[in-house]
Amino acid sequence: MEGIALANKKVEAVAAESAIRIVGRLTNEWDLFEGMREVCKEHGIESAQFQCIGSLQHATYVQVERDGTEGRIRYSNKKQTASPVELLSATGFIGKDEEGSLDVHMHGVFVDCDGVISGGHFLANENPVAVTIEYILYPLSNVQMERKRDAIWGMPVFHFSQGGESIGNA
Image 1 (cartoon, rainbow, N blue to C red):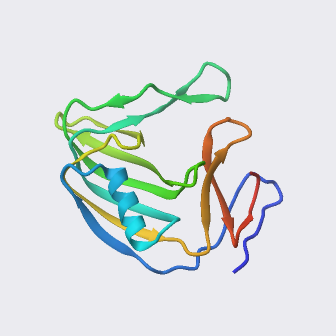
Image 2: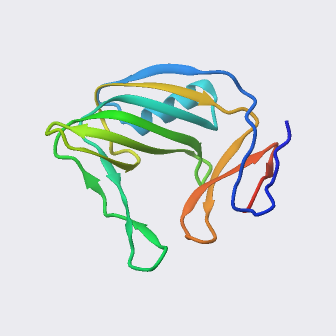
C-alpha cells in the first residue's frame, strides 16, 4: 500500500499493513518506558502504537503551558506526583530517536492517592510500575517513525515514512 503525501505539508500519514497485536503486563518496579522498549526488542518491533492502564509508584511528566507569545506553547518544568497513581488511560508511539535507539512517546491521565486527576506528557525512565501495567501493543509493519527536529518548534518530534521514503515535511 502506497503512502500519500498531502499537498499542504501539514499532515503526515502512512498506511500500516500489520494486524498483529501483543498484549501483556509489566510487573512492579519495572520502569514503564524501559518495559515497553524491552517488549519491542523481544519481538523485533521498531514502530508501534500502544495503550496501557495500571499503577505507578509515581508519575513523572510535563504539561503544556502558554509561553507568553501569541500562539506559542512550551512545556512545564518536570512534575512528579507525591504518591502512587492509577493510570486511567495512556497511549503512545514507539519509534526511533535521533541516534537510532527505541524511543517511547506517551501521554496519559492518572488519579493520585488524594483523588486528584491530572495528566500530561510522561518522561522517559522515571515512571516505575507499582502493581502492574497492562498494555496492548500494535506493531506497525512497513512504517518507520523517527524523531527529527521540527522546523517550526526546534524540538525532536516523530516523522513518519513508508518503504524507506519520507512522507510529508521533514
